[in-house]
Amino acid sequence: MTRERIVRLVAGAMVLVSLALGVWVNSWWLLLTAFVGANLFQSALTKWCLLDDILRMFFGVKSEAERVRQDTEIKPPQTR
Image (tube, rainbow, N blue to C red):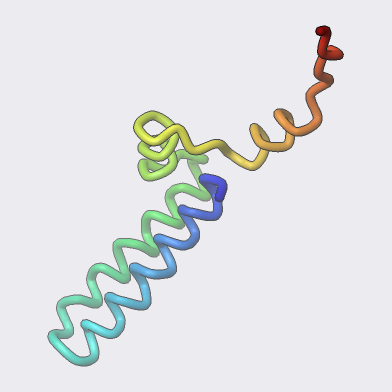
């Protein structure tokens, strides 16, 4: 799974969980939904996402572009 997909997955899960908590536990949980939305908005404008950096630096998860580049790389023939 690529970094972009993980970021979308985590953001979507956070929104759904915080909405459920906001409805059934306490409405203050809706602030988490607002925070996730603000982070998505900020990352679209600045092209920077903290979770993306964490996934790259600490977990070594590749981006979609890195995966495509790696898959299309011309590899030298193997010699015996």
